[in-house]
Length: 212
Image (cartoon, rainbow, N blue to C red; front, side, top):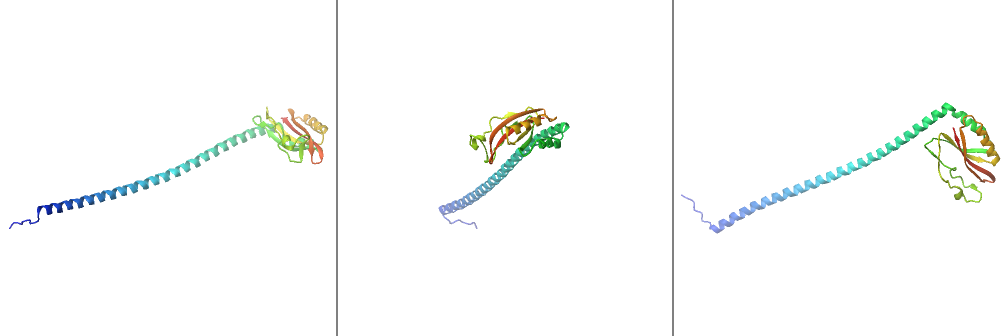
């Protein structure tokens, strides 16, 4: 016996339409979930890439700083090598103990040295002494005016920068004459002479370039 469908055609069509709509709804929901999942995954990947980029930038900055430090160390190494060669040449001519002993022998209670510095041909020598304590000032000038360093000069060869004070210009002249008699001295340049007051007594500040 053959089955007979007694459901009206319009009702059957509506049922089929609802079934198709459910299928489409499920498909759209699945597609939306897939899009949301892909968007979340893409957002996570972007955030991870940004963090990695930030770490790489920090590493790059650290490496750049290390490179700058290395350049500074290399420059310092070259300076030390130049000074080493200068000292080697100087020691071949005169020993440092003898040099300082000769300088010490020319000083006394009326003349004292505050600075002795070895300079090379590549280093500029200041035309005056560094800024002094406030107790020493040049007559007729304020301490700020007396601290003016003036133009720089270039040393032509290895030399000693000698700075100090003397109680009089005559004592300074005797010191210069004693230096001129030393066998290791190749030349002498008096760069600065200033009459002033040190504490409660008159004094003469001087700066010499002693060529070796």
